[in-house]
Image (tube, rainbow, N blue to C red; front, top):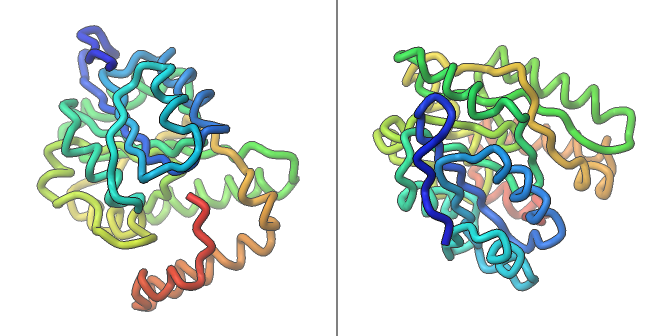
Amino acid sequence: MQNPRTVFAGQLRISVILPVLNEEHVIGSTLQALLSLMPYEIIVVDGGSSDGTRAVCDQFGVRVLTSDPGRARQMNCGARDATGDVLLFLHADTTLPASALKDISAAMREPDCPAGRFDVEIEGGHWMLKIIAWLINYRSRITKIATGDQALFVRRAVFETMGGFQDIPLMEDIAFCRALKRMGPIDCLRTRAITSGRRWERDGVWRTIIKMWMLKLGYLAGVSPERLKQYYADTR
């Protein structure tokens, strides 16, 4: 089991929480990059993987918890076990920038700032991925709504006050950020987290764009996440 570190950026204890499900092909490289940053603690929350995800995590000596499947449930499970001052929620296929912990520490020096997120860069060969990433970052900067790929971080006390993520099958990040905006100004960092474009390229870029916009518009129009889930091919 990984021991919490006593030396970290700006003396701010940052707990990194990764919800995973059947991610054996990507979780190793993510953990390797993450360990090089030396966060206070890393908590992987497995939603019942049937592949070698847990074995890969064990090789890196990180703490692995077990939870019912569902990203919101898994992230809440990890948050309950975390002991850091700031909770950073990271996808299994997303890599933080080298300056991530210092960037977070700088953002958290503002006492009125409850949370923040990174800009995102989508890794892949399709030319549209750069445009999509730019649009995501621009929209997020205007709306202060972050998606999970943008590595959302939040003060632990704020997270607990809000009651964590809603236990819904999808759109948990959107719902959380909409409520988070009422807690204070969200810092939109310009340093970039790099996330895999594998699902965009596998399912088709234009097809994925249309599907995601339909889901978001449906959610904002009041369609329940449970109903939207029926039309969402969830590979997480």
